[in-house]
Length: 435
Image 1 (spheres, rainbow, N blue to C red):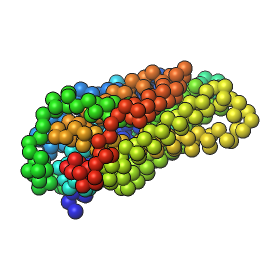
Image 2: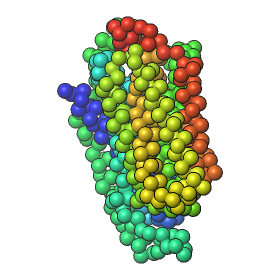
Image 3: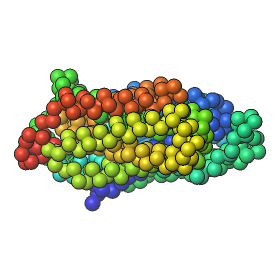
Image 4: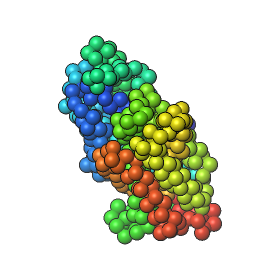
């Protein structure tokens, strides 16, 4: 029972980290006004968080192997600090404080992403690890889904058609609601620290489960062993590239749908639901896959299906988001385009978000005997890097085509080149590889 409490507190903390990462992206125009910056500056608040993960991942992975309790506390403290800096940024209208909050949020995320597989390794027996990893990952995306709904709470002001920005009085009201929402977020993120201390122990890094694994497998291998593991790197490239796509879509879809199309002109309240569809369908798919796909022999089949769905749906989204096609659809079937895009975003989210728990678990099994903190952390490190890069280059000209191209490359690599050693093994042997 205690292991599920540990997972619940971790899920609470990682969900809040994701909520905070979505504080500004769903309302780029209003956020830019309130923080005295432009749309590019707001994009950097999202990309800056992803980039801040990169230098912090190596110390986070090392700390989770050698001092997991202390490292986890550091991650929670950085999470809470980021939340209070975001509140202070909105209260003072300071873009600098907002950018600093993104850095702190990225440091916290580094601990989180390295914990997905290592938490399952330390606290759960082998047969429950795939499910535990999927739950941990999908808690983060649940936070994304909730964070994408912030326009419902803040109720952003309408842009003046003449000036192109919100008028002063409505903007002030929006800023006050924004500030109150960020205050509640900061209090909640601070509560994660006492919850963690109450449910965890400094001895958690040496649980009976971990001792049993070491007794069966011997000492954990050096992360340098990964350098000679070609299949691990190929799988890692596939998982991280598509994971980068899943991180990019929520960060760019509002600016593309509301700022790059001349017709229709959607606002943040409308793009909120395309974002919500993408993330929610990914969460549901990830939980179902984590629960149902327990046999490693079938993992490669499930992953191929999800990768194919992602490539096809993103291709359709990129076509419909082309200005000429969007204008034609708006003129001839004004209500259909929005509904079609909500459905397509849901399919894309199911494929690009739903696979990550399974992908992390598969990468960790290929990396044995290297600790899951290193292998899983490396995959997620690359996810952040690809996500930051794709977010920055996905402007109005590239639109969704960059993400679409990446999805097709991943599908080709995974189906034509990658090997899947579990597929040819009896079930008892494939299960043993996951231990």
